[in-house]
Length: 180
Image (cartoon, rainbow, N blue to C red):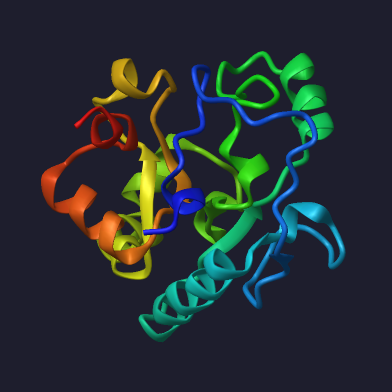
């Protein structure tokens, strides 16, 4: 497995302010941001996997929509300073800066990022089928003390199919995997 895809990014393993992924592209998926917005970007491998995952959802009659992908360090700093929710990571500690994370929503929630996403057909689909395309629900319910983040059923992270399936079958977080 390639190291960048399985890299742990958190308060103990931050990305530097100058970290910019080398292969950012705009996946051909529905997005809640206008064309050209940096939040529409993902690393190439994650983008292709997202296209396949979203296509599978569409074939199942579901409507997944990307809300936020890549986020530069400076933008994360702005969001962190403005946040009152507790959901926003400090700059350098957000997986969005890696280009491997994607926040997802659906029409039922008016494309908002809400915990109730987990109960929508799209949320259930994402949890079930995401690993088959290399994605995990990065901050699962009941693992808040391990991940250090609140439950975010809308936040997926590309980690490769092999690792995503392994984590899904073993119910391990990325933190637990790195501790093995």
